[in-house]
Image (spheres, rainbow, N blue to C red):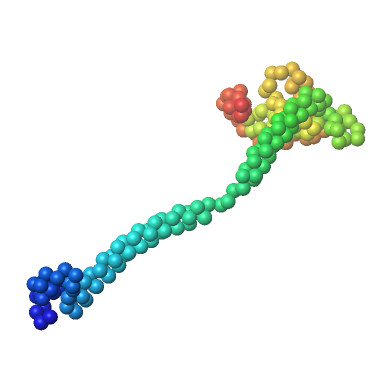
Length: 189
């Protein structure tokens, strides 16, 4: 093949003779190199596009897995246990509130009238504290009943008239222009 511009696919001598069984393909070395390099480039290009797609999918899956891995594992049994514990605590708190209300209703507010005491005294178990507004707050040491001196209830006033076994504490004394307004403003209700 002296002529490199010659068509490599057709052998001139065989094309002239018309012998279809004996046709041969002739190609130059440079054309063969060009053909191989273009075939390899096409194959590598297809492979690289596919590998890029696989890598990008893998990276997105890896990112999702990392995010999921940062979340702490919560056992479903632990969730059920916490729910049951909350319900149990709610029931216990309701029972305690009912017990406190019942004990406040039956408490004589005398020293030693608790279930834990050996004997009952004649003095009141109310601890009293005078606020700077002039209101006296009393708390029973047995049942934690809170009473206020400005409460018009007759039973509350009766409790305040009993002699207490405790000394009254005081927050100090202040003078107000309108003491009744100061006393009512000091209540949290």
